[in-house]
Image 1 (cartoon, rainbow, N blue to C red):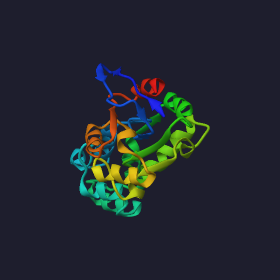
Image 2: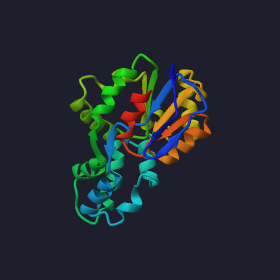
Image 3: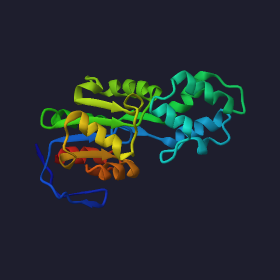
Length: 222
């Protein structure tokens, strides 16, 4: 078990009304890997999507993207549905490149600190992601880590396999139930405020990261 102390992150003071946690659930994008949502919007605009900003953003997603993110439609279906939305003649590969434009590099220092936490508390990941993004994330992860992502976590839950997504409270409850986790002794770390709010509704303790570089300070303190 880990003891949590009061701490200040990015100018915000966090005080925890509990002393011990049994597990930590991490988000992926914005926590371990750099994400630039605007890059995907701009990439779609370059290939003829005049309303790209209304199709996808961090806080709001069109129905097709939501369906893809929880595994209701295949990658091929997802691509085929996007192709005719462009004002230009484009290829499936261009759609994939635009969709993946948001995926950046992995924060190597955070992975190093995961090594120190491994074995001291139960570690999990819960990410809203899809098949195309996950494939690219894994490649980026392997560029900076000698060990695969699965090595560090007891279980990695991704929305397109789980069939559920954040910020719905039932998603967090499902993960806790699957692993026998007590929400009051489980810490959830995410960069999106709507996900933090959903986790809090399900009873989890939370840390809202203002910057991906804050994670190193959080893990070092733990």
